[in-house]
Length: 151
Image (cartoon, rainbow, N blue to C red; front, side, top):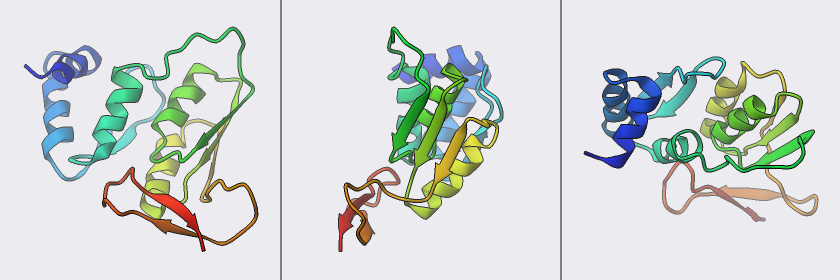
């Protein structure tokens, strides 16, 4: 059995887990996931890189690191659809999370995924070291492979 399937079963239950896993992996449509413990629901585009990002953040605990302080400001640059922003807003409810994402479809899901969290502010911009014109590019076609370039 696929290792991530067990993680989905732990999160969504013995019956719900396999169904969510299969829909996220094989169906090319937008899903709404009710993640236990989180406010609201999260959108995930099935059959895309959203699944791997969701798994890293919520199933594998990529950001479960111990800090000896409680951050007051968190910047999620390249926020994609907002999974890390939601994770940090949930984990640090007194912190302000600034979620920055330039790509229009990712930004649409970012705002949807974060609307239940008043401590998240979304910006349809890109981070750059100076004020200039930027172009948005994606050579691979993956939803998480956008980058900006000057010019």
